[in-house]
Image 1 (tube, helix red, strand yellow):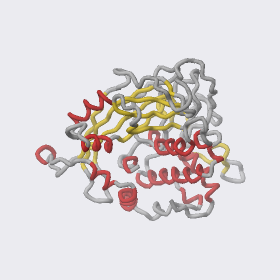
Image 2 (cartoon, helix red, strand yellow):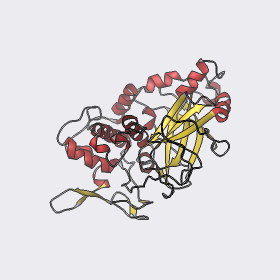
Image 3 (cartoon, one colour):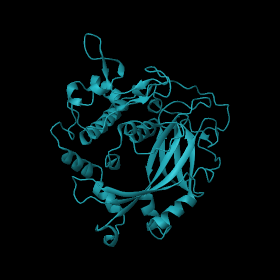
Image 4 (cartoon, one colour):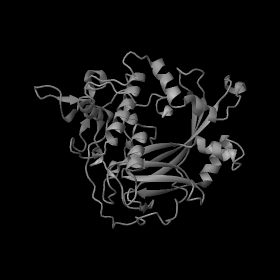
Length: 367
């Protein structure tokens, strides 16, 4: 969570996981925590609950607590980077609210929310300030400075403890700083369907080291090619591999070859069925990113990324997990899936804010 805010990510990347088909743009975004909670709460088996399906997720009371939290993340981003707002972009599919190839941006009406008796609709550019809806968050108050918010993030989300997990190296001879730390992550690009990607090492399929879930449309082999991005932090995994003697150090020249050779993956639909990499309309790409970080020296400042190394697409050079016996369901690798795709509005923090404003009313929200 801390890393979500340490850099000024362009709003059109921060605010959604959607990427153009064939895109190589990967970055942390607000849908990483959003989607994971939906599927963790709703589940992914034959008895999947409401939270795993966008069309009915709001029937679960947890939905409203969760989206208040997502709105709070949006508020934090706006307080830290107030000029970082939505820029015009071309809609890539037809939804209830917009047409394919339509330009959407700050002036796009947020149907069906009207802001006055004249019938005018709220627009994205109208709702960056939450206080106009008579609420605010207890740890992101209107009077809080960016330094105060950075300190809150550092203390609440382990900016310090997360950094302490990394082995710091003296590199004063090369860049004049006292220490650096190495951070590792997996950057994923895949089809925009409800599914979960699990990562594990070599043939240890029972030892999942990380996972990423996506909330969205049901799998449909005939759906348009829409790509979503996600980032999974692997730094704690790397530290554990060093601690148990699997690797000799956390240096990039040790870690990157190890992950390239041993990292494997598999995908599951929300009903528990495994889906193959070559399933129709299921695009998948995975990269390993290694960043060299200059740690922060105070709680009210962020670490500085000195450089990032990218290992090219692993999915192009090796196969994913073989079809294993999933807990429920079957392997999906042909055109026989009967789920139907449903057009849903593109998720944006600004639209979510209007929905929540009607629920939160004049109450101060404490999370």
